[in-house]
Image (cartoon, rainbow over all chains, first blue to last red; front, side):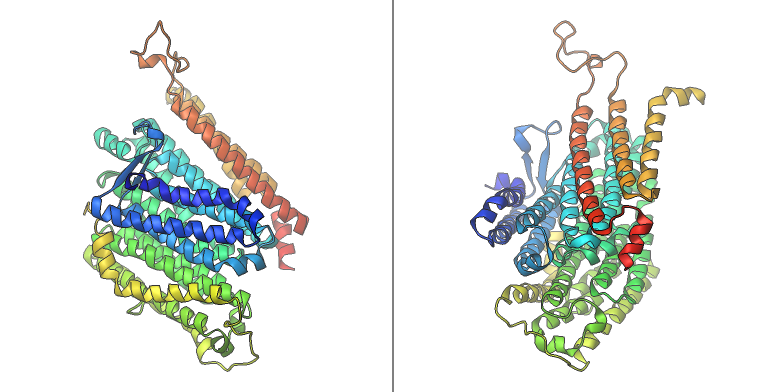
Length: 490
Length: 123
């Protein structure tokens, strides 16, 4: 079985999507159950892949038995396995949680919604497991098209936001495609390992530099790095709450994965990065994103919009870590992919609970009755908020700690200052909400979250909150066992 | 200089179409025109790959018994064309999703003009 590992996660997601119409015929809850089960299966395969790769090393899979570089190759190495676990885990928690939110917010049939969600997740899984540059583009567009569908499913306002995202997202993916064209013209290959070997041989002629630039810029649009982040706040705010909880932790992270893959594997040595000023650019834009996203999050009146701007800032941390170019910088960036995915997922799940059982997501309506009637969600929100600010022992502290170490290692003291300032800004906009939840007066009674049928709303949120502490306490284990093997080049 | 310009004529043409599509996608006020810009943009990318695959004096990549397989110069590399078949499918799907979103927007707001849309979304 382990030789088929790379394709199993993909099959779990796409197979679930194919079974969806049948599941809809059998029972009205069939689609939800199918989505939850296939992401559980995908999560099991991903965990298996993570352990197998850690023990036996990377697994290569020739699709259709066509040998690379002619055929398409799937590759699960430590980085891919890590990303697969993150995305299948987030998918499992969110889809289990989504039943009530989807029934309430999505006008279209749940069959279509869940099929699109699984196709998007399958696309993400394809992006992280393919070893072929063009195949990566195809999976990128599969995931993007399905995500426009599930992000635009919450009435006309979300359709407008999704359309704007579609235009910018297509420009990003197309830039990537043109870049692949330039690389293909220069090297005659699309296989990542092969392209890298050929670039070592031919040096870095101008077409390769141009192609690399276009690929990076295209991915930065998907990555939503300042100043290419304009599509993000509207999309996350207007989308159905379960779509936000699914796309916000994963969409930008997959683009981060592509950037890491380009920097570590596709571009050999430092030549191309230096020609593009890639590291300096990522570090400076990341620092700007951290400050801009945090400042913009402070005055927001809508919780989802505030979380969206905080995503802009968190993308900045990952970008800064990559830009530092030091071992600890990369460790911080990759660890932050995991930690931020869990934190953002937890926060968006709580905001979904507030929409379903609370008084909606306008911050001015929050008061202590939330704490009284939704104790578990409020507590989970508090844990995730503390993690976002970066207080130990929660997960958020450790990725920031590694980023600080990376800045120190690279001798960039001003990035240390920026990370510390941004933690203070995070504290400003999260304590504003915690104050309303825990210190304000309670007024009218809300329906209790212990009401029947709420277990599915509460348990996923609690699991994510506990996981944030567990990930924090276990971060040195994660770094030494799973992240250090990714960075064997250092 | 003019030599360089004319020897790369098809690429300049392709670049022109690309810019045209990008201009329409980013700056047109009407959402439907943005979708038209998107199709122009994608057509330009397809042209780019096809132009790059062209070789003077080469034929279709079907094994010619007389010419044999020794001389690769006689055959065009078919891979870019097959890649672009996939890209065309992706492009059609993108336009489909875009039009579906536009139908929903037009049903609810009765307009596809960006300024009017912004006005009507406020109320």
